[in-house]
Structures are given as C-alpha cells and as structure tokens.
Amino acid sequence: MPQAIVVSVNGGPEVLVPTEVPARSPGAGEVLVRVAAAGVNFIDTYQRAGIYKVPTPFTPGMEGAGTVEAVGADVTELAVGDRVAWAQSIGSYAEQAVVPAAWAVRVPDEVPDDTAGATLLQGLTAHYLVTSTYPVVEGDTVLVHAAAGGVGLLLVQLAKARGATVIGTVSTPDKERLAREAGADEVIRYTEEDFVTRTRTLTNGEGVAAVYDGVGATTFDGSLATLRPRGVLALFGAASGPVPPVDPQRLNAAGSVFLARPSLAHHLATPEENRWRVDEVLGAVARGELHVNITGRYALADARRAHEDLESRKTTGKLLLLP
Figure (spheres, helix red, strand yellow):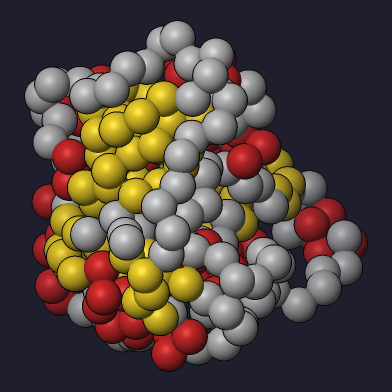
C-alpha cells in the first residue's frame, strides 16, 4: 500500500502522521501521479492547524511534481509517462496523488522533477503579485518582505526582470546575502534597523510603489507607512499571524493607498490562466532566467520536521518532501 501523510485532527506539526493508504485510481478528468517531489508551503501549515478549514482526515500538500501512472476517462492531453507538475490540488504529501488533469501541466525537459515540485506554488504566487496585484513597471521601487524566503527570492527576481528597484527585508547576514544574490538592490536587516525609516530614506521620502507582504501581523503597520500616495500593499500571507481588523480610514490617511488580500486560487481562475502563468514561470526556469533555491529536502516520513523548520522562520528558499 502507498504511503501518505494524513492529518486526522487539526493541530501542530505532530498531527502529520505517515500512514499506509489504499491505492487510488483516477476518475474522469483526473490523472494518477507517482509523486517525485512535494513542495512544503505555509498554506499547508494553515490547513494543518485549522486556520484554513479542510475536512479531516486529509493529506496535505497543494504542490508537487511526478510522472503520470494512469489517466482517467476523458483525459486526452496527458498520457502515462508524462512528467507533470501542479499547484492547486491538495494531497501531494504522498507517494501517489490523484490530480485534476486540467491543472496538471507538462514539465519542460530542461526542468528536473525536484525543481518543478519546488517552483509552481511560490512561483505562480510571485507571478500574479508582480503582474496582476500590482503590475510592476520599469522605474518602480518596491519593497519585498522576507526577501530570502521561498516567495521572496522569486519576487525579487521577477520584479527586477520587469525593471524595478527592489528593497528587501531580512533578519540575518546569510539571508541578506541570498537576497542580494537574487538581485535585491537594497537589503534592510529589520532586526538591526527600522525598515520604515530606512525605506523612506532610500526613496528620498517618497515611499514605494508596492509592498509585497507575506509576513502579516508584525509588518503590516510598517508596510502601510512605507507606501507612496496611491501605493499598493499586497498582503498575501500571514507568517507572523493574521492582521487584526483594519479601519478603512487608515488607507486614506496613508495617502489614498490600496490594500489587497489576494490568493493564488483567484489568479488561476481558468485552465487557460493557469497555463499562461505556468508557461511563463517554468519557461523562465528552463531558460535559466529564474532560479529556484531548494534549501531543505526531507523524506516523506519527516513531514513533521519540515513543518517545524518552516514555522521557525529560520529557513530560506524552498523545502521539499521527497517520497
């Protein structure tokens, strides 16, 4: 019987239990995939803890890559043996996963399985942030929080590719090095100096066009204070906890700024939009224009340790489970 990680009750990392599960077959419009790599993401921790509600029991993991082992009825664009990746199908923490064929995309030959499994969820998040939530244009200055994290490193690269000046925030010298290697023009160690004051200084008091904030509670007030008039605060995560309710008048006081709370699902509204974003992201990886930094590889049975490491906020880059 194949192995999977099963969450039977919401809680801490200890509820991630390696379990033998019945073998599955794909239904109509689905493919069965032998999972080569499953990405570990903060959304997995929110679902595990019950912050984002998923009926229990369930197998976590929204992202993965592997090889198609069987196809269901009505599947015509994929075949047994195809290498595929996906980013919005729960159940990837497993040796086998059933994935909707409409959301499984072929992986370019130049992209290995582990890179494909590490790229899509964070890569597509970074893509919609810089192309849709606030479309970066040449000459913009933007602020990226947690610039050495998985999404942060990709955001830095994609914003630079669109002609922006990028300011990143990090906590340690090692993380500063990673952010600069990704292309950040300026890096602020928020443990040593106030990022609001420093950002205002770097922008000659003007503020930034956009803040990409996946941290949440501890950075929200400062993020608002760094925006230029009519700037955009893209709050796409809550690694430090959820932001308390906000008086809309604060947006006026900050300069008629915009607050967005986007999510990936709403930016993959159709298979066509998914294909466009995937092709741009994986295409950039295949051409060597976008680098995915995999910093942690864990056996499937070590999912608990992977979550503990991620939630410690001491990690950089991307964490993977390798069934």
